[in-house]
Image (cartoon, rainbow, N blue to C red):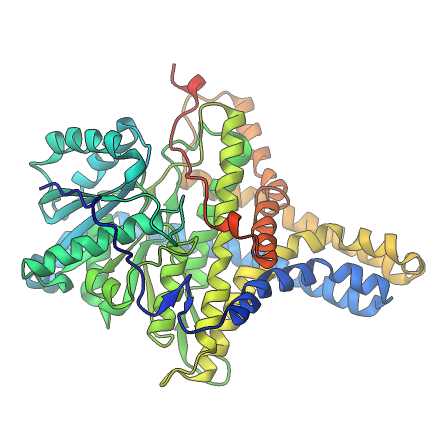
Length: 539
């Protein structure tokens, strides 16, 4: 079956939201919440300046000492989390999940179907075909997977041609294949972010299922980029979790091992370093930061937000109003929107079966770096989750405990604002203090603190050794490498520090500053990351 909904120009967005905010909220309140993240971030960045100008030497040293202690603790926690995560991955990969499903609830499994929602823009067939082949190899059976390709109207001709070729090859394997065309230029919608596209396709597909009398509660929707290739056991592992946890429909499911192995050894070094580190960070977050206990209350809250790819029941997706096409984020926004609508009870569930994705790559190394910056800038605009979530939490809502709201606010601040500033302050804080407060140079602090920090940072630097070992277990290096290439591979790990002060910092500060200043033109149109290969690598 094929469907073209491009002639339908209705606006599809949450009924109670306007530009992401509660629909009845005044413009002045919206601007306050938009200003808040950038204001807090710049305040944290300028703390060394504030301490220096007011000559608060002791307060400055206490803050730096706290950051160092915190970063040291996080480093060791990071290594432990990765170690545990890799052990769990070996366990999950050696498990016969289909056998466990048969032993658990085969009747419910037979009722379930999977909707593979595949958003596309300008991707060529050589990107899409391996992806479809991977989903067709799933051990739950490709016949249980219904493919929904979400196309953008600007690239309809290209993608319809791709769809027809893919259907000719895989049509007799998947349960069904259909597509929807998202019209270009619907007023209010964000351009360059896949949220509006998948929102359009998913809503139309749900309408179709309901018109056919289908129970959408029997469908698990797979949301991901079109380059994601799952391990054959991914869907069966997720399904087993779904069949065995409490309140399975009040959760989303994802792989804790989100790798970029599709092209990791062909991208420029700094992009490779960032991509590999992101894989490790996500893995350890699932291990050590998935569940938090609210102080003094004792209630557990699932605080692992969604990233890039996840699976959710189609009925749950409808209940939380799908995605908001008017904001510059769809993956992480899904989690925070669900948390608000479920009064902070929405849960996160992971499996340690890997998925394989593309790192940013373009036709030349130079273009790859440009694409990488633009992608990070778009990701930086994910900070929109902060103002719209805080705004929603500020509304009076029955049965939403205040302690749970406050805990969510704390997590938002820590993970989406404060983290961004730590490395900058640790790197430049002492220099700023010395430049702006000459008297500080004659204190005992100025002599002892740098010496202590050098010892601690040297110890932290040694963590690169186990990091390289762990990383190579996730992304094995090419077998034909010379000895010197292994040395370069180890040295590339140090690029993550460079990245944390460049690509992982500047575009995020740029995005927050743009939102703070109300530069509307920047947040309505974004760069669509091109999924191509470096030409020199194709020969």
